Image (cartoon, rainbow, N blue to C red; front, side):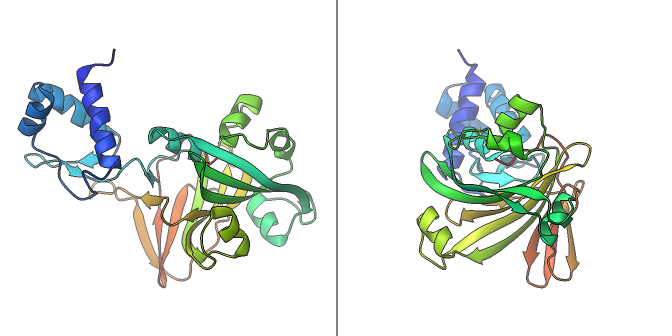
Length: 278
């Protein structure tokens, strides 16, 4: 049986997910939470501490806790796969390969995957969902050295990243992300179940091994009503660096996320750790 503070922590997580506590709002005072759950303030503090460590809430000494994010948000402070993110929300990740074929490496592929132009690379179009509802369309290009392992994975595998780890020991360690918005084209609209020209959140990413060897680059398009990304920063640990100039295409192995903002862009430098997108 779970400890009482763990049960309370999970109930608070679900309340945040249901937006009973919206992002930016404050939790009830400890005394009110203790009365609601019939426990001591110490037990409430343990539950709140768990949510604080997960980045869901924050606080200042002497102030009530503020909701920073829900589990429906994807934070760049910890790089998690789509399947891991889904599990954190109590949802089930689904996946389906729409198409898979080898094509010659283009100039763009060459820069991102550090491969010679003309070499064969594997292009995979994959539709991802939450509890069967389509939310993400991934257009991924895999380097030639990992492509055979990707081909052996069943078309409806919910987590390619986990399967590659189990089959080959591969760990996606570093990533660079460029975030912007695009209008849904005909194929996007049909597969995601939205109107053509509907806004989609696009994340273009390059991921590598711990040694810096490129594994894949991808153009991921999310339904705008299905997901958001969050960044937590503070005076002591500011993950944001804004600079002028046009947004660039991710092409290096540095661990950063970039969001275009007018004629500026915001770069998010997350902690490096086990990354998995998919």
